Amino acid sequence: MIIQEIQSLLLNNFDTYKSRLIANQKQLIKNVDEEHIFISLLDEKSLIEKIDQIASKSIDDYPLLGVPFAVKDNIDVVGFATTAGCKAYEYIPKVSAFSVQQLEKAGAICIGKTNMDQFATGLVGTRSPYGIAKNYFNEDYIPGGSSSGSASVVAAGYVTFSLGTDTAGSGRVPAAFQNIIGFKSSKGIVSCSGVVPACKSLDCVSIFANRLKDVEHILSIVSVYDANDPYSRNNNQFDLKKEIKIAIPLKANLKFFGNEAYEKAYANFITSLSDKNYSLEQIDFTPMFEAAKLLYEGPWLSERYHAVGEFMEQHATEVNTTVLKVVSDGKNNLATSYFDAEYKLKALKKQFDYYTESYDAFVMPTVGTIYTKEEIKENPIGLNTNLGYYTNFMNLLDCTAVALPVSITENKLPFGITLFAPALNDKNLLST
Image (cartoon, rainbow, N blue to C red):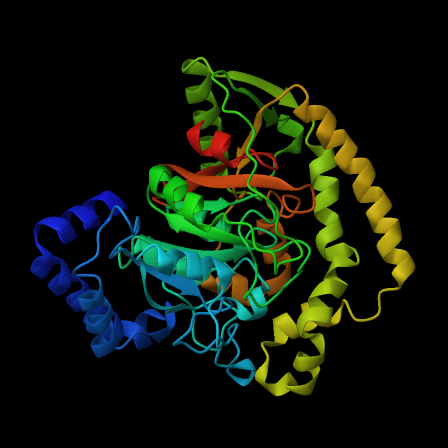
């Protein structure tokens, strides 16, 4: 249900609202070992207590009153353990993440912590000891990651929205694979206090939902300056524009990795935009894709090692082997390699900034293809790399982005596009 619908039910028929949430939670608890979308869930008694606490409250004072949501298990929530997808890493937080605090102050109810690629390393959703989260659109296919469970729980309709994280596409890829919206704000607009870091200088909290208006509403609540987060910044958004000039990649920039159905779906979408008189121009996206290579081929991999590398080495038998290999590759980078990459990134950012003088937003596929669970099992790193082709540069170049469902392909799989823009254009993007 969308926010407006669930709050209308709460106001007009509280008993029905209460019984519906309780029945929903019972179903989740019953299916938890089959669907693999949750790592921990609120028990029925605690849920009833939370519901009863909101009975006398007003939506005027609590803009998310009674709205159920879920949180990726690398984001702290009081009352739940945080595992980051690794049982050996588990701890009990004393304080909720800053973003979660804002949501709960607004009256929202966290019903559980969602499954994820271990330590937020992966775009596939298969790197978890808690099983592979169910893809509700097609169970043979991967759910996408690393925020796999957070996308699945929205796609299934168990919650109105969920929080994930996004460092390299984790808040967009699973949205594309499950036909929902995945939004990644500008860096620092949503605080990462209380989030287990992947790459702390790049990490973002992401929002999954089924309606852009809901995303916009949630963003307005969580985008609060946090003095305790060194990367937090004020949400000083640029003015909304009536006419938007959009850039799309040259055909030579596009990669679909043999997926003809996605290639056709993208071409059809671009044609539909042209028919609606959007101002579209093709430009060379090479600077963006060159920046993307730096994320895993450059020293930012060392930032992942800095966050959890030593823990992984000490608990190697309890860590996913693919995650361990990826993160361990960042152990021995020299400081000089960081500066080499930083200088290259600055040059690429200048090229991107030059584009932003002429274009307000950019459009491209969210992903070039989708894989089955079996295909990922055979080639876990190579195919994961393909999934990051369109996503890996976003935080390096300081963009805001929203992944949108567009169509169902002829082979009955969802296809989506990503609309992105320079930082602090979040509101513009959500209203385009």
